[in-house]
Length: 138
Image (cartoon, rainbow, N blue to C red; front, side):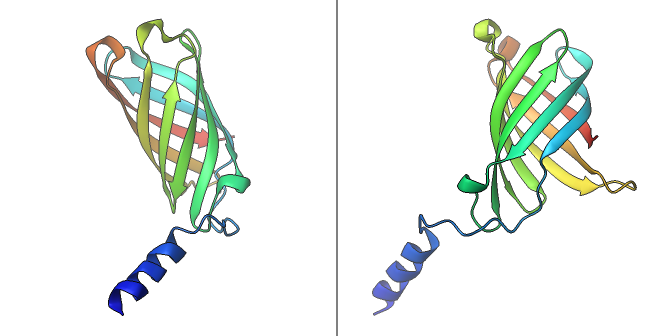
């Protein structure tokens, strides 16, 4: 009986019928300042858009784009739960293997705009790299 109940609960938890998204919407354009271990200081722009069709209850799905002058565009995607977001990004020009994964924490600033701090890791860029960004919604 316990196995049947557990199997039923697991099936319900893994249901592919998405519930409407109930979390905060972090969509928007953000101005960013970063510190890259290899490249030093930089500025860029992040654009994020919620993908409601692929979000489920407290879990959000996003299209992500980081643009850094002199380095290019880094399209990617992200998944959120609460104020945390996992982010994958990859430079369109892959000759340098400039791609990675980040973890961001969101909060509202005094002006009521979203901001986030992101730590990222790039396992193959110049034999490994990491950095941090602070981004504020326009």
